[in-house]
Length: 222
Image (tube, rainbow, N blue to C red):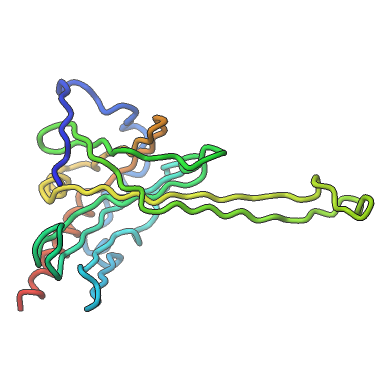
């Protein structure tokens, strides 16, 4: 699937993306070596699955994104499918949002696309919202006992947690572009109500994923 290109002047910035928002964590993330990232990269290869799944969602939470986080994933097809032939590698930006980023108070937010930069300039691609989760718990708070045999509503506190999971396919060339940078790659998930969350991927994250994909493909070829 090829990203749809935005027809924009090169001077137009991605809406809402702020480089200063990530200044404090760039240093920590950029110092994380590829070897350290590889240690936390997961590979799931089961004979009954149609693909080898490679994920970086076990990396440390990047911390300064309020209500969202993202990571890189890849899948190597082990069987022919509508997505490609055996051995083809597919790349994704995976993400999760929670709290107000996931829920409006009455319904889940619908994330529609992802804005990002690649070697040719600004681009966007559709987002697959793969899962919606909502849980509520009630706590009974003592408040002077019952009234006429009923517990007053004021003594019941409800706590709800909501989250959504996101997946955006990207090209290998985009991952290679991220790996070539000397600074973190910024991107933004955008909901239909214009709610956004922005995150970053470091060049070493991209390098580690590319190397692991190549390593797993080499094993398949033996």
